Length: 216
Image 1 (cartoon, one colour):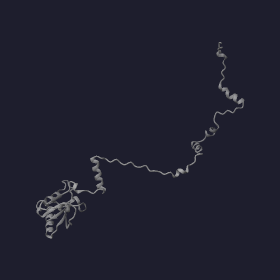
Image 2: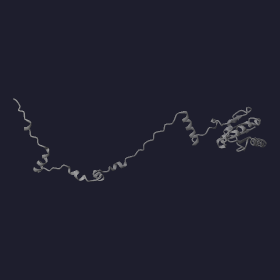
Image 3: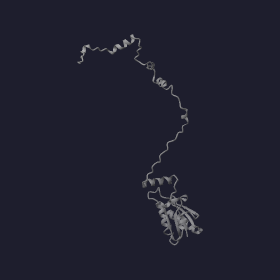
Image 4: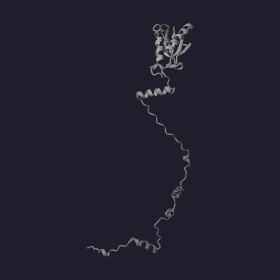
């Protein structure tokens, strides 16, 4: 059976624009904007926020929740030789590590070969009581030599066994520790036969700027 084909002009198309009129005639309420949003159109952002948060309530139990501080991650130390040296220097400066004077280039130690035993160790550790001190700070070489000779003669006369000579470190001198080198040269030279040993003093007694001298 053949289907009858409808001609284009026989089809009826009704525009949706007439729908609103039809609904009004039949008593159907028409609203293009939701009732709840009509009032909110003129509200500020702050008012809208307060309206949205009206039903929000605080959970009081959350007030007692413990707060844990974030654990600080350990700082990675530089394991290079330079890093270790800097850490050691920092510990010495802050007093966390004692300065070992024997490991410095300024350390001085000498003992007469005629004397043996633990003399130098005892002298280094301050086991001998210092009986007199000569301070050569600010003294020129010629005057220092005369002062040292006078001081040693007086020490021998009084029968002193252990004395201390402060020569300084020469840190401000452009030529370095000139006086220190001169004192060591004199003690190991012209006064050698009268000296048992000498060593850099402990930190509390002048450290690298002084010598303990043990007389025969």
